[in-house]
Image (cartoon, rainbow, N blue to C red; front, side, top):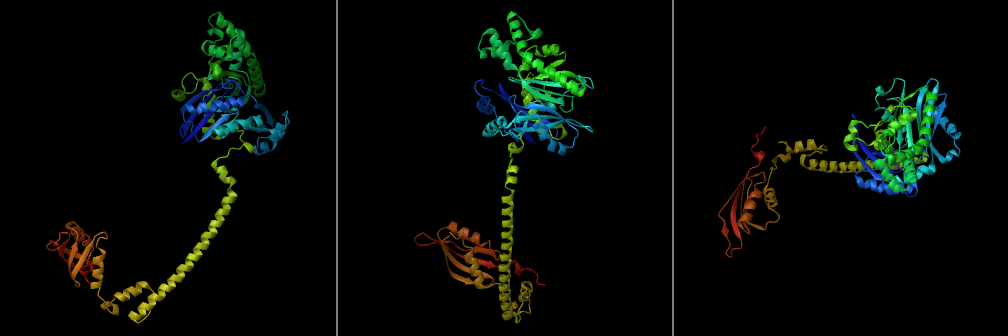
Length: 525
């Protein structure tokens, strides 16, 4: 299982969705939001909001996916007379350069194929300036949220298209998804279950409505934002003269968005010869009451608020269209293969550096170290074998000398030499398997090292040991007997009468030890 963090870097609120992927799909594990300050430069506002988001809960994930914030990412539809991926890669830079008002070296771009057939390929190309992308990556890296994927805010909705039921539109009709954010609108168009065929981002959204309300009623922006969120409505949801006045301000602020929507829909229809049969809206501004119905009338297009799948509602909630972008980003990291949008601005100098990539960069040093280690292992083996060979020759010489003196002929094979020494015909056959010296050595070696004991009147023969021992107390005497019994050849250890010394500081006793080794009772063949 892998965890993916979809991080929506909105200009009003940061949204984070963590999903856990399994072979069955993706499960939402957590959803967090944090407000973004409205004063200052965009990157400074982002830096101020990120710590607040991290305070909400754990965002630990195996990968992070974001879309480039703001409206600086431009989208270019490009047609090529071929669909071979290698040819597209080698040609695309020239096509992009011809459409840019600035030097290609200052840009980072990527593409996604929207349509490919024998006639060629239709591409959606997103281009951003490097000086717009770099500060965002630096801010996220500082907070340990380095994204593996930086994608297009519209293209990321491909995985949401897969959740749209085909029965909602006619067979040849497409579905449009419009994310109405605070300062930016993102749009994706495609058929249910298919790829995104058109995508773009443009300025506009909730902040325009807030400023229009502030100007209409001559109130502060914070008060206008709060009134909009609590009482704002358009269309048939408007109740009261004050609400009518506010709705008029909202609709005037929405006119630029409506113009961009009409031109995008018209362009898609002309290029694809296909009508859009349904508009789904999401984002924070989509929560404005009556907006879906009003847009449907203005665009003459069925419009609904996008509903997230049932399985996400336990964590995210029921009425949270503003979470759609974060959830789509999380899906972007959890879906692979043809269903995963290809677009990723982490290319070239901005390529994501994972642990494996770091190891690849150090491959030369690692390879050199491995070669040196291999050579040292070979040298060590040669030296070790040489020492062992010399030592083996010395042992053979000693074994040959011993067998020469005992058996009358040298024998270097240890197994044969041992067999000959044990044989009945050998001079060693008469050597008894044990001696009084051996038994005395075993006796003393089995005395516990911490015990203070004295032996005297020791009489040893090959079948019995008789001795007198003196120690500090009866407990020591019991421990001594127990220790002696652990030797396999001391079959019985019998204790005599225990006597105390005259001053009472010592105890003594006579021990009688019966000697019988296990080999003594084995049948002789």
